[in-house]
Amino acid sequence: MRNQPDPLHHMSIMYEKSLLRAVRLKRYDHPNAMSLQPVPYTVHTVSNVMLDSVDDNTYVVNSRFIVLEYRRDITRTYGGAYVHTLESSDAGFKIRMKKVELVNCDGVLDSIQVYL
Image 1 (cartoon, helix red, strand yellow):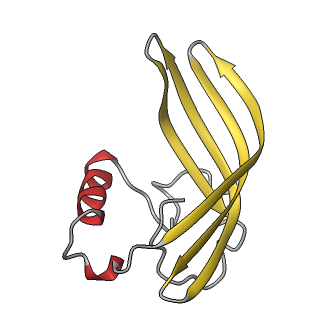
Image 2 (cartoon, one colour):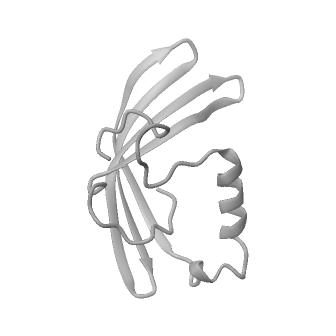
């Protein structure tokens, strides 16, 4: 859904919390994950990085991206916008939330095998 206000009350292509993300990452590295064989090769380009707002130690950053994926002789291109909510600490910045809005989010999508 384009311009989705929140993932809890609106349909998302993917919505993960930390536990599901940890399971996915563990599966991604497992040699028996046949759906990930061969491993996809990707190139990520991020541009137009803009600071949207600052509130105490929280920063909202908007940017645009293009991801090129090559796997099983097929090349896929994904593009869209990122919104990152970052928290500043003594150790540096940590990502509190990342939202990805695909340009073709209301179109038919193949299985997405890469992290956008």
